[in-house]
Length: 552
Ligand code: AHR
Image 1: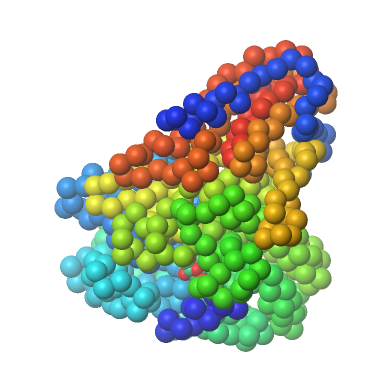
Image 2: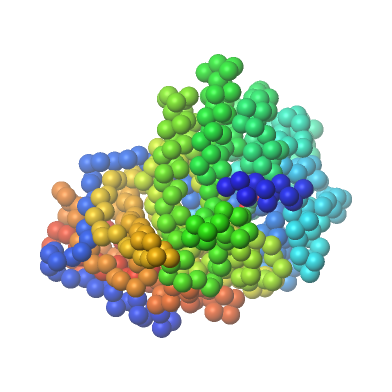
């Protein structure tokens, strides 16, 4: 996706729910279904790291100022300046980790601007300032630095998440990265920076474990070659102060299928010997689904589709791009294995989601904001299922981005707030965290569609299964826009004692939640009656489903 590089460089239940409900039937005969899912209890794939369910918050447009930070004196309900609705929702979805301050913004950020007394903090031109809309609030173009390290870590503590900080490698020296670690992690009373932290009300160390060493260093993070970046990474990663804790350093990794980046970086790292590999916890992979031009163009602006106005083919095209992420994970994993045979380094997919053209902003003027629909919910479910199926490879993943940006879980403006269909998917899937991923075999007819005169297809049902003790959770997406899919689900060797289904769907594939219609797309739960060893379930068209099965 060289065009994105170019773009970044140039910057220097209503009626629909009722319709869906009729498909939540539970039939007796185990014959005549078009699909089947077999969940294999004796084929564990590994523990699903909770951090796969991570988030990304960049100081960009309305993400921080308006989205997260409303200010301590605001009339908008807040907890120490942080939007209360957001805190409540994120506790609910058990958000495990949040990445901050970018994105591209990170490589322009001086962490020292965001600490100390709030009224003494400088205002700086935001990295995204040049593409900010003229009518946007000043805080978007000129960073007021009211939300810095202390406020971010406090936000993480409030929601029970771990902070993941991205260090500036493009425009600050390694020393500043080490000092930021010192500010966050040095013991109470030990250093001048620890005292500074204490003076803000935080005597105890923040204990930040996850650190990104630059962001998209192939583009906005410095336009490095993989070899040049590897040299920088080694410098930044050498002798980082630890304060008795394990740090997990994440290297800037490839953009979608840039295998050369993965290989070039690791090859260069290895030039100083195999022990260098052990300084890397993860390699960051970024993947955005954006090209809905059906093969007409690769231009970053021309190729994008509309978030709200789309036809069935656009729906399928986006989901087809979504499933590409599995081949990227497998491909990069294989390339990494050529250099890191023991696979000590994990993939960290710290930016993923669909990216549409401007026009669907809930708050006009918020850059990179779009309104997620049911299509994005199905895309997100499919993506999370892919991560669940590769637990040994993925160390962390972060949806881009949490609020008011791209694949948002939440939209907010002033006192208005709503959960998007993507937010509900994270709610549905949260119970996968920490479960044992199980192999599940999906046998389902493909979806066929006409791509401007050419036959195209994508898998019928797909999903993932995980086990917590006797609780088995199966999540499934049905991408078909109009056909339900009746499916037999078996768990050889197990007896099901109890079952429930929670479904997110709507009769209109464009359905989405807004500030005025907050509940257009909401999940519905139903207890299922058990009859026999397997279950038959009708997955509604255009749906994301969670089945919770209690085993004997
Ligand atoms: O998420 C928006 C931007 O996309 C990020 O700042 C950057 O890392 C990526 O190109």
